[in-house]
Amino acid sequence: MKDLRIAAVVCRAPVGDIDHNLAQTRHWTRLAKAAGADLVCFPELNLTGYYNRADMAAIALPYPGPETASLSDLARETRIIILAGLAERNPQGLPFASHLVFWPTGAIEVYRKLHLAPNERPIFSAGDSVPIFHAPQAAFGIQLCYDGHFPELATAMTAKGAQILFLPHASPRGDAQAKHQSWLRHLPARAYDNGVFVVACNQWGTNGKGLTFPGNAVVFDPAGNPLASRLTDDEGLLVVDLKASAWDAVRSHPMRHFFPNRRPELYFPK
Image (tube, rainbow, N blue to C red; front, side, top):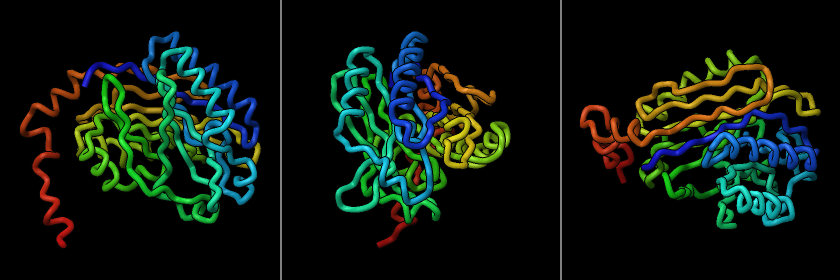
C-alpha cells in the first residue's frame, strides 16, 4: 500500500432531483480535488437519492447512461477517483443499489449492494459478486450501509486483497452523534479484525420523501482506532490521509495481524 488522501462527502441528495444531485457531485469532487484528495467517496445513492418505496424504480438511472458518462468525464478532467452511488436500472427486475468507481482513465466499475435490509427487499435487487478495485495506491472494497453488518463480507474482501473498505451510507434517523455511536458498535471491528482502513460517510438532511439523515462520517485505521470523524449538522468533506505506515504497522506485527492465522476450513467444513 502507498499513502492515499481520501475525501468522504456528507451531502444532501433529494430523491429524484438528478440535476441537483449531479451538480452537487461535481461541486464536492472539485472541492475534494482542491484539498489534495486522490479519491472522493459519496454517500449511498447520492445521484438518485435514497427511498425505500416502490417508486424508486421510476427514478433509477441506466448504467451506462448520460449521468455516468458525465461523471466519467469529471474523473478524467480532475484526475481523481470518484465513488458515487445510484439506483441502477435493471432490465431483468427491481433496480440495484449500486456504487460506481469512476477512474481517471475513463474506465467505470460497479459494486451492487449484496445485503438488502428487510424493508429494501421489495424495492431493490441484490448483487451477486464481491469485486475488489485496484487504485495505484491501494486495493479497496465497497460495502453499502446494511452490508457493513456482515463480518463475512469484510473477511471475503480482505481475502481478495482489500486494504481499505469504503462504506457509503444512506442511514436515516437520529443526530450525527447518535449515529456515530451506533457505527462504533461494528465498524471498528471490521477494521481491527481484518487489518484494513474503514471509511464511512452518510447522507445529510431531508430527502423530500420523509426521511432525514444525520450526516456523519468517520475513518478507522487498521488497528480499529478512529483517525477522524465529522459530526457537524451540515454538508461537508472529511479529508484524511491513509498512511501506508499505519497499514504496515499492523500487517508486519505477528501479534496484531490476525488474518493470516484464520482457519476457514474449520468454520465452513464441507
